[in-house]
Length: 238
Image (cartoon, rainbow, N blue to C red; front, side, top):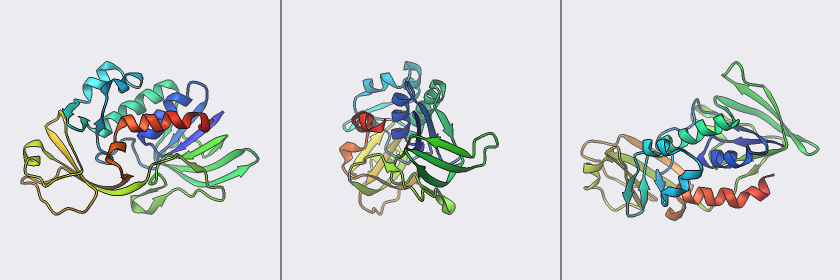
């Protein structure tokens, strides 16, 4: 079976890890790379859950740091390791690729594509197509997928909220106002996340800032929760 996952998210790569054992899987990402910084809190609650998805060497590279709310790490590093492993397993990761149309003929989808990568196909036939997050169809600069006339199904997500996040030096984080989620990392940085707007400037500035649509429940903002949702979805996916 041919499966297309729209959006190069951790959800997509975990799902691809499981599906590629028996199916052909494509991950389509409109950005130039998988794993942009500061798009999701870098949080793992039970580190042993990583054992199925990456090597000990890759886990050591994450420089995870223990926190009251789990282990902190750089989310983009975690995602890039997942992407590399997925590619080694046979998943086709198509970056800088935009979907121009999505139509359904019988039980199959037909996708017309536009890509900045010369060697990538301009047309795909798929048995299953899934949008992998709320923001996977758009990008800065008004670039977005056109998923008509046959809108594909979406990967199930919990109720969402708008989160403001920033990365600061761990020493500066000690002066920060109360947060909804705080994660120190092994690289000397700390992630601060608020569900509401905040007015605070760290002494030495933010190294990264983002506003993202994410699960509203902080307990859902971790790799463990993503794995649970993917495993629950597997029987429905194919």
